[in-house]
Length: 244
Image 1: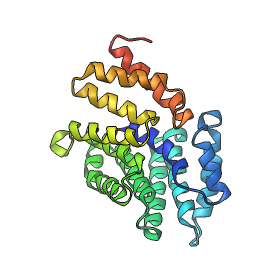
Image 2 (image 1 turned 135 degrees about the vertical axis):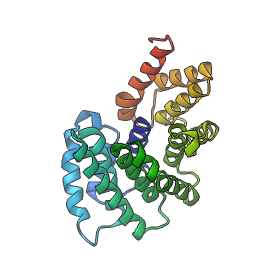
Image 3 (image 1 turned 90 degrees about the horizontal axis):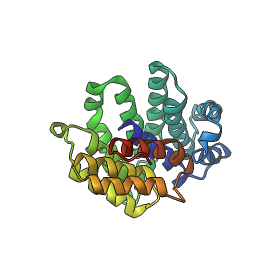
């Protein structure tokens, strides 16, 4: 789930916000973060300062939730740093929900940061927080059925979670396929579908999806595709005897 959450979260920032110069700066960074990872630190500090104000708007809080998630995944080097970043991110998303309870992105960021915080803490904490993460995902989809990132989150949840705790590969596949209907160039969504198909024993279908990831000419998030999705797709193909 970690890899799936990482990539879907890095994609979503550019899909819903306008807002302040800081927000626009983060939107731009989200598709080219590989060029200057240190910029994440700078934006995190600036957005944290902006978010401290009681007058912080929804866009600023969503940007703070996003950059904290990015920092936890890309820049943090210790478990404590990761936990602090994800916790700050979920608190920012929670404030965004309070201001805009019908915001699908706010629900998504709350679920994504909460899920990552639980994963960092360990499997038992992750399972304990699972109902919270699932509720955020379901609420995001109820508010906006066309919000593709929530399908990626849902697909990863149903893929990763054990069946006794609510995992369901058929539902995972359905989530990923619906997300790809909405955004066919969402390469992490396609990677998630490939993993699910492999787990179901559909190796040939999974291989086609992985090759489609590698062959994508206009990914929704070019940086994410280059840094996350291509290496992961190649690694999975290598386990199938394909080293292309």
